[in-house]
Structures are given as C-alpha cells and as structure tokens.
Amino acid sequence: MTKRAFDESGDGKGAGDGKGAGDGKGAGDGKGAGDGKGAGDGKGAGAGVGVSFSTLSDPLSAPGATAIGGLVFPDDGWDPANLVPAILAQYLARPDCMAELEPPPANDLQDDITALFNFIAQRPGRIAEIEGQSVSIESYFNTMLMLRPGSKLWTRVLIAAGIEIGHAVGMHWKLVYKRARPVQVAPLLMPVLPTPGHASYPNNHALQSMLIAMSLAAIFDGTDLAASMASQLGALAARIGENREIAGLHWPSDTDASDTLAPLVFARMQDTEAFQSALAKAREEWNLGSLRKGPALPAKA
Image 1: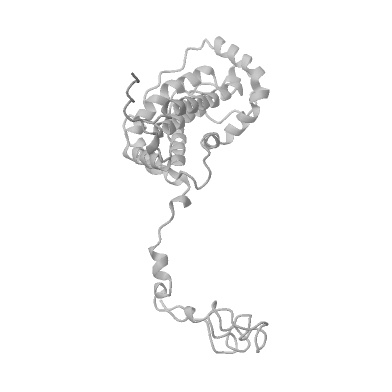
Image 2: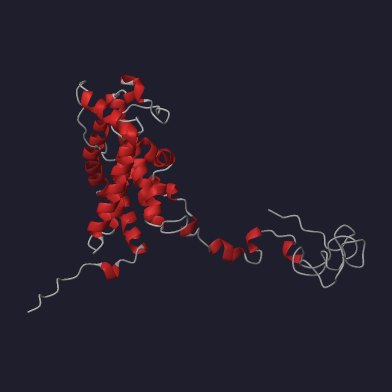
C-alpha cells in the first residue's frame, strides 16, 4: 500500500511558508525566511519531518523498521497476571484439580460463634490489615520480599498463580457446600466489611495466602534459607486467614478447611509443567547458588 508523502517543495510545507525540505528542525534561530515556518528553527531543513516520510510502497522499508521488527517485548514489561493463564489452564485441565474437601462441620456452631465474639476485641489493632487485605493479598507478600513492579517477574507470577488457582478451587467448594456466613447466624457480630457475594466455606483468603506462601517457599528449597522462609511466609498466610475471622466474615472452621485443602492443591500445582517452569525462572531471579546447601563440614577433632 502506498503511503501519502509529506509535500516537500510546495507552498504548504516547502522551504517558504510550510515545513521545509529537511528531516526536521533546521539551522536557524527563528522560524525561517518564509511565512513563519521556513528554513529556520521551526521546521526547516533539519532532522524531523522530511524525506524519511516520503512515499513508501512498504512501510517496513523505512530506516529503522528492521530494528523495530527484530525487538521482542521485554520481560519486565509484562504484567504477571497476563502470564498466569498458562499455569491456570494446565492446572484446571487436571481431572483432580479441585482436590477433595470434606463438608463443613454439623450445625453445632457454638464454639465457632464464641470464638468470633472473642475476636471482636482484636479488631482495633487489625483493622488496617483487614481493610488492606480485602483489596490486595499480594501486596503483603510483595512487601515481605521487597518486590516492586518490574522486579522479579516470575516470583510475582507465582504469587498471581496462587491467587488465581486458589480462587478457582475455593469458589468450586463454596458452590458445593453453600455454607452460611457468620452474620447470617449471629447478626450481632457486625462484620467490619460488607459480606462478600459468595458462600463461607472454605476461607478463600486463607487458601490463596497459603498457596502463595508454599509457592514462594519452594523458591528457597535446598538452601540455607528454606526453613526460615517457609516459617515466615506461613506465618503471614495464617495471619491473613485469621484476619477474616476477626473481621466477622468467616468461621474458624472455614479457615481449618483451607489449611487442609491448600497442601492438596499445591501438590497438584507442582505436578504441572507450566508451574515448574515459572518456579525455575523465579529461582534464577534470586541468585541462590551461593546459598545452596553443600555437604556437611567434618566435625572438629
């Protein structure tokens, strides 16, 4: 297809009153000797609007087009959420992807109700976390690991995978069991946030957080940091799950269900090629070679 060229010599864009016969901004100091935009500092015989935009039968033959066509989208330009569908698709293709979850406890909820009323006293000290985690779980893990936009892409992909897979599995079981929310049974709990638009069992914040913690801990497997990272990540996941109880949104037994479900789901995540590929790339981002455990040093005599 032929491209329309910029006119280079007429009275609209020529060397008098238009946008001169060069490539951009010429060597004057005003706006040329013409009608205002001639061969001067305006748009004359320099480097911007000129012959490079002449009539082209193939736009890719323009100077620089080959270089542009040869570039690839940079890794640090990706949004992790846009790399997760490949992991999620492989996971959901498994016939056992939803794992197994026993029904919620029978209708005797007195212990759970008592626990939730006792939690109310903790709300003032936890309210900022509760509100923040209702919007974003991942930001708390990002803070723990000092992750920023554009840094450690594949580590952030693992976080996003835990959120998406946890959401899919959790919503499946919520629909299966349709457990009532605490406020339906004990309205005086007065949850500090609006009740979400889905059933109570299991606690999805807890499930997603535990899947994230397990995925991130796996990065450090086989290193001197393994036990410490697993412990600290697990503690954060447990706190996020508990915060949903303190908020009055989940029964403690919802969180217990997530504790049971998370290891089963994570084992299935580890059994997919896409997750293993992301995990390997995340390990490379952390340069863990020097932290790999070697043979035990001989005991001193």
